Amino acid sequence: MTRNTTSRSLHDLGLAAWFGGTLANAVALNPAAAQAGSAGDKGAVANAGWDRWTPVNAAAIGAHVVGSLGQLRGNAGRIKGQKRVPSMVVAKTALTAAALGVTAYSRSLGKVVDSQNNVPVASGTEPTAATPPDVAAAQKKLAALQWAVPALTGALVVVSSFAGEQERASEVHQGLLKKVLPA
Image (tube, rainbow, N blue to C red):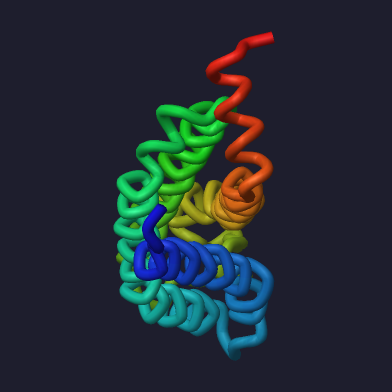
């Protein structure tokens, strides 16, 4: 087996930033925007924060995807030959696709919120009665989705930990034996 330090690092650092940044924004930025002076300022603060995070998040996601592809390439033999590894790869791929989809959809909703300046809002994800209907609808969806991305990327962290455990010599030998000698 060869080392995959670069791809593993890209995978892990990208996932860590994707998970941590979206969790921090849901926990801190969106509610903290409610502390801004006027209702119009509240939306501007949340939008400015998310606009600053978006390029960093895109780089983190890109690093994670590149690292994931490198991990697939580096573990191709184990994926083919070790029992239970293919199902882990499928689960991890499905979670990654779901996290990418929710992230992209959230960003498109964020652009709706960001499209108007000084829109009156209660916080980053809470409209007021004076919030335009399209922005209010986007905010209501974002209120739920802000937790979906950290939940999905957090699940990816867990599955990645499980994948790392599958690389232990005892697991590899056991998985290869079960593949060759099915019970």
